[in-house]
Image (cartoon, rainbow, N blue to C red; front, side, top):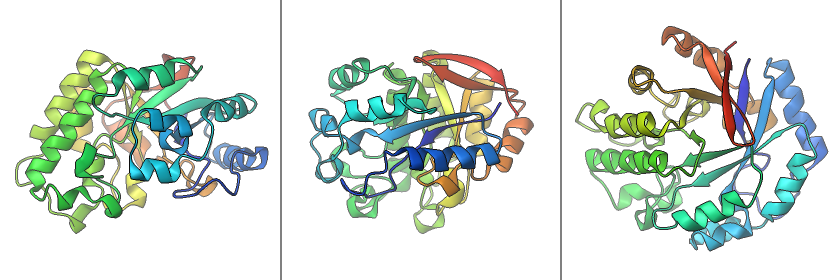
Length: 274
């Protein structure tokens, strides 16, 4: 079985119009998935697209994006063939508010991610560039991956998204001098303790870094720790569904991963990969 659980019906930086929560848009995603042999397809829209997210974190970027109603989104997706998911950012200190937002809806899975390091800024958005606040790459990588470890341990999420997103800019940002495996270790320990699934995402192949999330060395450590994996493209348009899956499947085969996570009602099972 192949899955793609990290999809966005809305492209980046779209406001309230036009409406992308339509059956025609879903049909375009479904057609792309069928063409690529992907059986399980799920949408995980960014939590900050919804007005309810402002109860979790009142940030200028979130205010600019929060145009949709979360319950209307859930109702729409439940009327389609898509699995119902959400990509929810980990915000330290807001765990109770995040839990209330998630527990009130019948998601099939929730993808937990780290984009912003609080007031310091974002690792993937030059408009809120965290590198302006934390210029030392070793300090930034350590801090980011500690936040990812806290995300895993929070118990709020089912899938840990793009766990080394901090590498997004590739050669456009300085890399740490220390072996990055030292920074991966807290995440690996947190995954082993929490049992959260880890996303193998091909989105990095479309970005500056040109590499799958997580990096091979990171993935090797996770396999050794007994982690289970979810497979996703983080598509923001139908043409990105299943992008680069041949490379993801080759990596998983080389690592000896034979099963992939499948979700329903926030319960997971493992199915043969392929």
